Figure 1 (cartoon, rainbow, N blue to C red):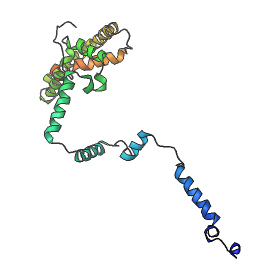
Figure 2 (spheres, helix red, strand yellow):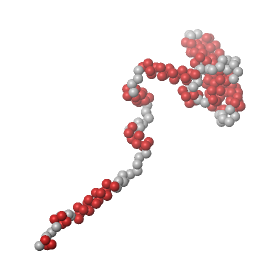
Figure 3 (cartoon, rainbow, N blue to C red):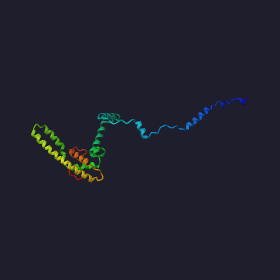
Figure 4 (cartoon, one colour):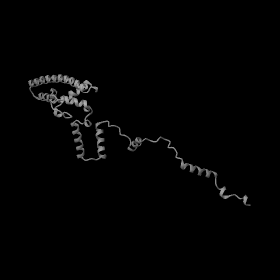
Length: 214
């Protein structure tokens, strides 16, 4: 009898299979979580670039790393020379971007102008050192004695001039920049170093001539 037969279409379907099909359909609409936070853009870029190399521990290591960077980014020797020349020209012209940190800022530029506007005995410091060296090579005790006395007197005059000039320039700088915090020792020492250099060798180059008004 037919009602005692099993229905092949209904009985062969397993309930577990039907449940699996339901789960599969649900999985297509459900996106599982990553289990971690989405990395930021900066972190992803840093990961792609790789770990940051530690700073060089010695000059030799810095030179070696510089050579490796040049090999990785090859440029011609003329390009490097032209770039170095451009940097030096801008530094000599007083461009803040290319100056050393100790020379940057309007305050330091003003101090340089004040020093360059006058002729100082401190400008003879390097020629005097050369004179002392030459006098020591001369095999005459009297020449060495007179040269030593002359150099000692000049050094004393330079020291007095340096102290007085440092105080004067510090006062002028404070009047010029009343809102800036001016350290007297720092400005005085900076002016002393600037004045003790030969005018043609000063970096950056003087913008004004001796006697010009500031």
